Amino acid sequence: MNNLNMIMGRLVKSMEAFKGSKPVINKEGILSVRSVCRDPEFEKYNSIKEYLTEKLVQNGFELASEDDILEMATKINDLLGDSDTYTDEFAFEGVKSGFEDIGCDCDYVVGKKGNAYVGISMWYEKTAKEPKFVEVMAI
Image (cartoon, rainbow, N blue to C red; front, side):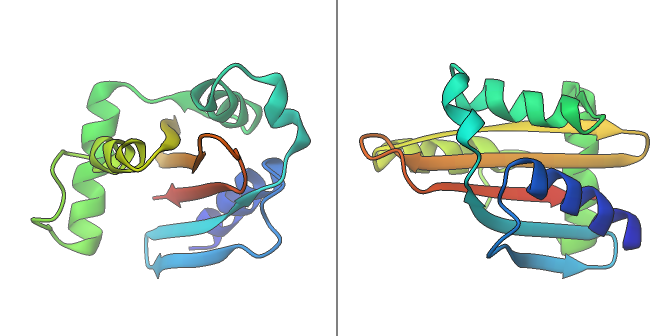
């Protein structure tokens, strides 16, 4: 668990989201934290995906392949148990669609470094663009 805490801490700090961050899942082998991104650098990027991808790369991760994403989803299901509430393998597409339906911009990236996988999602209301909510999951 210590390695997941270090990974999570670095990623969350790189988005200036450590203050006020709250774990939503904290089990052996999986950690998920939700917070608000306060990084003034965000405005320099053309999209949420571009920003999140840069944060992965800055923290030594490579973008995950489709096979990696399926492997991560399998590991999540093994750790948390299968759920009929998810409409896709990784649930991000369903969540993204739901946020877009209510007027939010939303996107996500998935990265891999060694045996560690990380999924980062960000969403915010389209017109106000604040607050920028982030959720980071590491396994």
